[in-house]
Image (cartoon, rainbow, N blue to C red; front, side):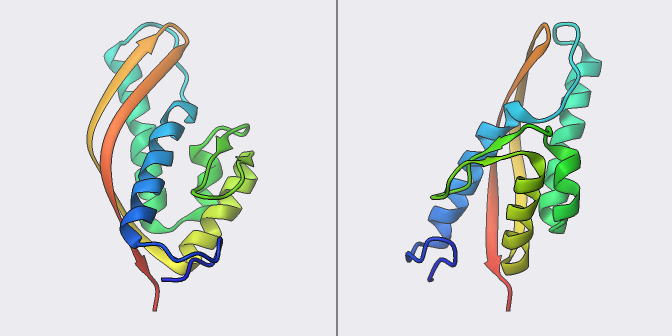
Length: 132
């Protein structure tokens, strides 16, 4: 398959792995208010953001990207320069969603809360299908 962004041929599996890896990095950049260490309420708030990201990707809803990521997000798409800000990330997603259908599923998640910081590690799978 010829990649429209980089002009290089690459497999869908490689694309999926890179997308997933970048999603894992971005987990720490999601917008969440955390005040006390590890309460059930805080973990649930983080899970709600993860669920919103999942729905945004699976629906192909680029307009909702700005509601999922922080305004000052630094997003690292595969083989491309880093994007700064939710508007730039939304535009990137719009281009991806115009060309591909994505099916993102998270298979595991572990949330650690440290005062005002939260870190989430999660695993998942993404299937990327070119649109006809």
